[in-house]
Every structure is written in C-alpha cells, then in structure tokens.
Image (cartoon, rainbow, N blue to C red; front, side):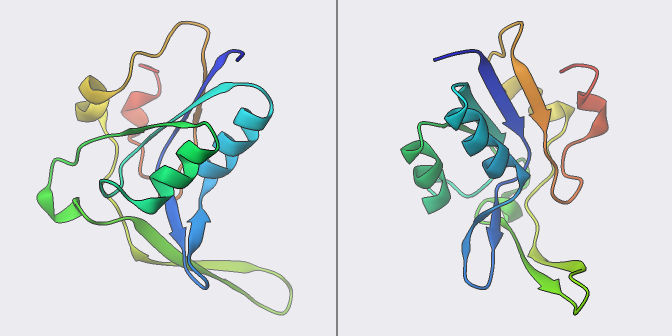
Length: 133
C-alpha cells in the first residue's frame, strides 16, 4: 500500500433507498482504489453495517466515542431532493455528534506526510482542529 489517507467527518445514511453516503466514504473508497492506505475517522453507532461495508473495501474505520450518550445510536441521515432544474436540497432527519478538539485524544496516530481530508456533511468537524491537523 502507498501513503496514508485520512478522511475525517460523518458517514451518512442516504435515505431513499438507504445506502452508505457522504463525502467521507466517497473519498475514502476513491483513495483506496488509487492505492492509498485509507482511514476514516468518524462518529457513528457501534457495529453499524456501514462500518463493515467500508472495511470490506479495505478501509480502516476509526470510530470515535461519543461524549453525549444521546448520540450513541445515531447516524447522520438524510434525503436528497432534486427539482426540475437538477438543483439539490438536502434534508437531514438525524445528525450525529460533532467531532471536536476534545476528540483528538481518541484519534489514531496520523503519521507525518499523510494526506488528510476533512469532508463535512453538516459542518460536523470543529474548525479548531484544522491547524492541529
């Protein structure tokens, strides 16, 4: 495998019909196919089927623990609605807890020279993490 690639943000349950979505899984799969050793840093329910799906592509999923128990079994979920001109409106029915500086202690060790992509879906990654990353 080549260089390490880390995608940080929520994995998303795209509804209608339900399937894995969001920028983090999309770029993670693309990076894996391009030969990167791919990692996803996210928050989602433990043992969620999307974790197994991502792992089946050879992606390493680092699930961060939630601080607030109300988020333990939530996954960011939503529907895309398109108008006649092809404009998209996203409606989120559920949102997982944000990823903040407090979560940094649970991040995997990111080696120097790694490629890092913050791919937010609902602004879930605290911008205070950016200079640290």
